[in-house]
Image 1 (cartoon, rainbow, N blue to C red):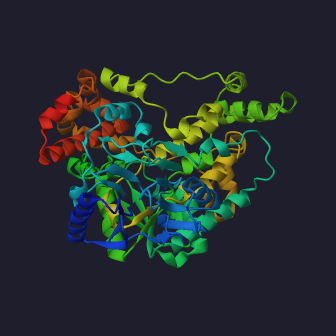
Image 2: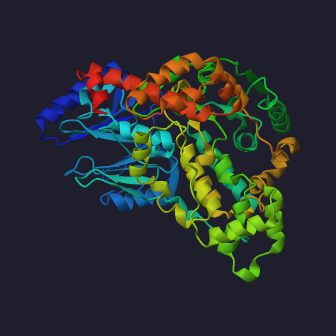
Image 3: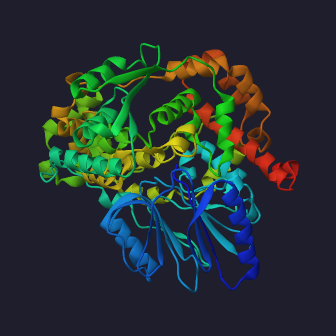
Length: 593
């Protein structure tokens, strides 16, 4: 995780200047360096792995991180300059716009969300930072407290966390959004996924080779940003595509190609990872994932940050990868995260909606409908019915919320506005709407972890150019009428091992994680049934207790729901203690919740 702290204040404000000096002393003691300084503005970067910084010629733009394109030389008009950044390049960056009259005018966060952007007021100062950590006690947010309603809403729909933090007093910036810092505030989404969405069955301009070139270009640029790297090869299609691009563009960059596996027939993908490595002439390191209980101590690290971290859900894997980065001096970790959404999984009977929306009736091909039905393993009549409903824009009913949610959580969810990325997704076809939702959900796999503290986690398939390419390619073409990620398979056909290219299954780790939950059931029961979430009225305890029965844990695959509860519970407990340590009362804050 690339860190930064930008402090801004009115230079004439003596109290704010003194507070900035106290923050400077704390940051210096915590191994941070002052990278840029002028009256009313101070940019601090960590001594270890500081991000790049670009300043515009007029001094009004501070761009932190990696930007591939030409940054604007003048930023007197922040909104126009932000649009220039979005339209003229891409990367993993934060842009802060300043002026002599208003030290911090606005923030832009790049669409990939590669760097976080949080902001708060601290008695005369505006703080913009990647996180709120212990080194920032001198500039703590005003009236900081836990947002129990957001925690409850996020138990129903974790997308609520994509553009918010569960801390009242700390404001987050949504990826692709421009947040104004004037009195009115508010976000404006400058990169809107639905803008790129296309439907239909014909798109001759989209050749698979174009996608391959785009991925090669992105991987080349990202690999040039830092030093040596580690790359994961899971055995699946997406990580194999990233490995193929790395091997073609910068093979000397990778110091270790790693496959993490489980001793379970359904989840062991070593045969595919070995085939991928052999095809690319790579030396593969195979690392077993131990069959152990849930590491609550590892998950408790989620409380160290302003955001709960879902990168900590597999603590043994996280620590091992961090150790390997330290051993080989890796600055980056390349993954295939995001491919399921960008390339689109097949088998949906709703693909006919894309055909019906994108083509006049006389171009609706019966052969296309037959192929969609065959890939979905359903009847052509069902495919036609679902397609017509989608074309008529009949909203599909959402599944009922889980029975373990308390009424307060459900009410909080109903009161939340739709995340910015989804506020107009209803205009898209069902499959394209699902693609946008999938990309948004993937952005939640973020936050602090041991591996992200040692190296930058690089997800090329979630870069702006690749997301735009995937969104702009019609679903029927991405899936060849329902075949799983067919367009991507064709794009990299000559660089993928046949065993990987022709595979349609995915590794299933549900039994592995179910056994981990079962081994930890007593500790989980104690944690959740008498925890902060329960006391806040966010859980139905009888339903949670039933979920934690060993047979239910092994066979019903409740892993995601339980781990979400555990991560948020541990995060909430840590912040109750942390806030009490600032002089408040943890009990009083919990009761006020």
